[in-house]
Image 1 (cartoon, rainbow, N blue to C red):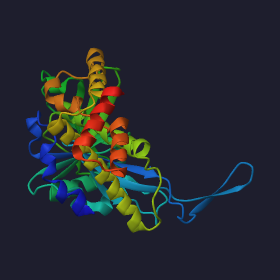
Image 2: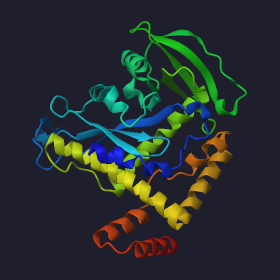
Image 3: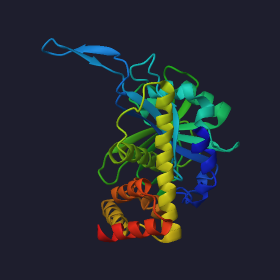
Image 4: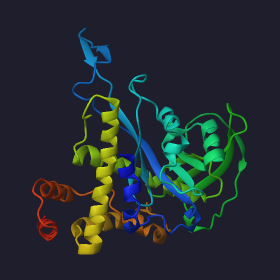
Length: 344
């Protein structure tokens, strides 16, 4: 399964646009968003615990099934990282899963000598583990900051006139009050659209603070993919009981997303078929964001990301299901999709 989701896709990914190609500072980096995704237990999973309702009745419950995924923020390809531990944990914490996956799992598919920047939520914060991965494996983390005590070690210098740093309020170097010796950055960003401040924490010390704030904004793409998996592919429940079967399901979900992405790109580039109405709606949303200030001034560097679909459309998925049930010729399938896009 790992071979299917990594090696066999290498040549195909050359056809995918690089959403970060406009940022030369990232030339030596692979950038991946990561998060956990949970769904219901399989029908025959064992009952793990019971809870008592207010009326005194007992309700038997099963453990939900969790997976950690990563999403390449350059190409939008998805990878299944690891299946959550259901033997020793009711709901495994992301950091425990990351440690089980290890540096080898995180770096899978990344060329030797390239750095990896992982963009995760605050569940991935562990200064000691960050230092280990940075020094030994070239892996860095960017997260939403937690409200925990830190030792302020001074302000960092950053270019206030650069468009990329618009909205940045502060870039500080701090240390953990519990893990002395581990220095990280805390970046404060004020959203120009709603006037709300956000704080990010990272152990990457070279990239512009505005670029790091933007990369965290891009992390939302993985949440949109999870919505696609749950509500458009209807993957809300585990297929089977064994740990191996659950892991296989996680790989198949990632593979399905990647194949749909590659197919939609082929249809667009080779056949000129795309959902123009959806493209129009996306452009209108972006225009509103620009008017409100939500889209920042370095829009040229973001062009391929701003117009990239974060999900496959419902029309595309319905068309694909119909073709898989009764496979026609490639020409007939393309004609059917063009007709569907034109009518609806």
